[in-house]
Length: 529
Image (cartoon, rainbow, N blue to C red; front, side, top):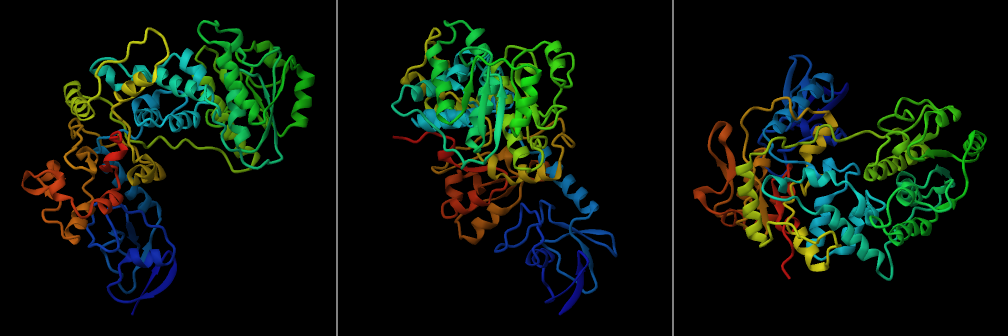
């Protein structure tokens, strides 16, 4: 037996025991992307490094055995810095978008690609639920949104953007016209009460999500009917009132209480603060004189709030929409409403402040137009999808048009977003994806020559897991490293298709892939019926 220290604890282990094994047996978290216990170590990602204090060396814990007298640190500043640099190097050569450009640009950050995929598969209810995870009023916004997401759509590089708003409107209209419009489940009543001043897009959105969290909402508005600028500032021809009423009715059915014809002055505001556990100002664009009367800190544009939490200078008072950012972009106000609801929920449950976890996400900034045209052409041929958008002359999409239009989506974002270890660790360590970006990089490409798997070489980080898995599982050809230096990539030997190298170990390889380079085909392409 040998003795050494790990994080100031004396341990005794058998000779030859790897440092990573010692650490994990003692409950110490060790990040890895190239290591699986049942396979030989490869030591490529360098995330598992520990520091040996006596020598000052950083050691790959997945391959270095413990030695007598070692003093090991697993999470010192030097270790964290090394792991961060390792992630930044991996990200520098990772050609993939964690989020599609349309989703990044959408002020509500809706998962547009997933909605499109669900519509293409005929999963209209599921598509509506996807929309409503971020947008409480999709039938409304589908008609009046200024559609910044469509400007960001990569289809613009080779033609016309996807009709995202029309597709959003399609699933929302289908739902409202059904016998049982979607009513999300709500958590048990929390006993907390939230006052929302203003029934415009921000206030309605906040209520929609806060009711789901179990908090009782009362919405105050000076007007006789709810809707704010949606009702009183938008022509009926642009937004039919029965559509607005239908989506407001869903919020009523969730349990929100509406106090209409109820203008709020300074005295009322103080009473509301005392009566409710939190207050949300969502009055739309409001004069600075009125805001001064409420004694809330304001700037030239409106109420000053924390950029992340939307909390004002008053404890328990939050604000968003036009009262903080004057303008006519309703989708931004709806997005504010959801963000405020999340922040208020944290505040009421004393869970601390929200943090923005997107700073370390991978992003393809500049896309080569010719390269992208080839990328899109391959997808269009496989899906047999149209390359031009549906011309509806402003009318809602019918079912056939919606299916065809959603099929034009190129699924630019990552379908492995939630499970991608590269993204998760990069955000955890605050890695800067741009730190080591060079002038040249891998090309955008998807390989579809396998019946169950799609391979994106540009996303591969050469962790070697799939190479070792196919070898252990006895694949005939398997996968291997081809090329040298910066040009090396994982592929099938002898220029054979992926299907020939990946027959027995499909599921193990896809599940082990830490960067979304290997995904199941059914996540990117519609189900053949």
